[in-house]
Image (cartoon, rainbow, N blue to C red; front, side, top):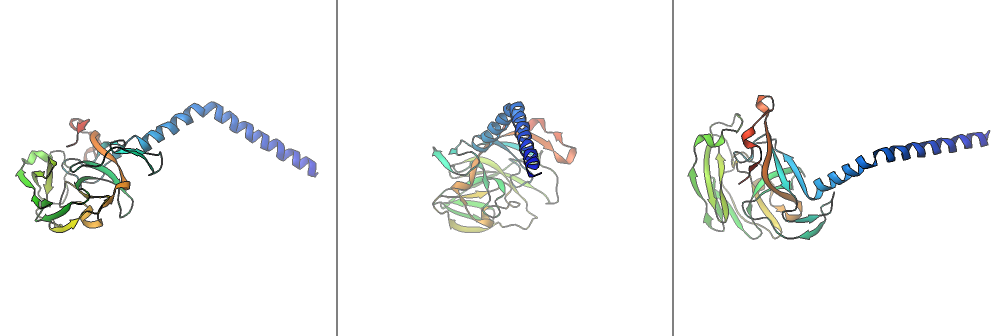
Length: 243
């Protein structure tokens, strides 16, 4: 009786091994392809969906941005281990990183580098004692920004120390943190802010971001879908460069 049961177990095990071998032989090309694809997304290039308006009007809800993970260095796939480093984020870069608050992937603009002194006075940015300048932009600047209940919007072109001029959003009727700091950015850390200054959860609230938490640089909008209008494509935003 014992020998019969043992033979059954052995036969069953052999059948299972044979079935797994068949599955591997029939699908190994697909499995290798999927592994390679995920490795590329992990270490070289990826995309990031943007569900919030914290970067309005530069990036709007429904945008999918391309993330260049080789912009500053190379990390081992599926890890944060840095294998090589050939650059650092610059002021004004739009980067994807893991939030120090909860680990969520976020998209913000680099405002402060290690050693920078950052402060905000009535929505006016000051970097190392140099105040940014602002020029009003026409209301059509944010024509792709979805409607919400944050009240009227004011768009301005911000020009700050060694940061490429870019649009920012001010929400005059919204309660917001318009005065902040000054603080000095610690070594190896970066100060991040959203372009939608009065509606962005950023370094003003959870502090600076460690260099190791930065995933890569967002360089363009690959595609954009309007969630308020049945996922209608915003064709004008497809493959548009981020400033």
